Image (cartoon, rainbow, N blue to C red):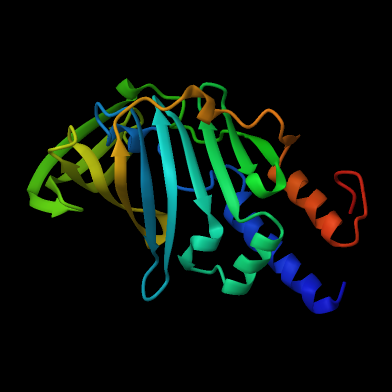
Length: 252
């Protein structure tokens, strides 16, 4: 393996680790706790989704995907190769695709207090503890206040634009601007929130189906290889790419 290719592979893994494997971080948008409250009575659905994260200037990343949600359980399917902007370079995205790491599914299971990171191209997944303190709280732990801002049309849906403030049982407030579609049982087809660090996330939903997803979509495939952490999975794949060395987990 030449030096240039090794550097590209290590760069791709560094990006993958930064995006997917930070402690307590769930890859993809979070839909538990205060965020779940925004969906009102729509607590079981599936939809196509596009998340846009703006960090000021031209630092905007767009991530398309598919979401399934059922009473706190969520599944988000994404293709890193389809992401645009941000710090993901085209070369790193190509390397992730070559390594089979571009297709990622994140399943959050508050009932089991775990998150599954599933890499379809590797036929493997990692299980990691769910560290979102909001995820296991009941809906009654959150209070929601709405203020109507006007009426707009989003993706052909007539909507009421609302300022929404969700307050948790610790007194923490989460403010969002939400476009509730009056022809879809007030489903929030567009949500705009401010994140820590001055980032703004805008989430758009299309192809919305207000039906309960199949329970099987919230479990990892039974024939996939399981790893105890995303780091262990990535380390094993890195060893394969660096010459097929089969070193034990945790070896320097």
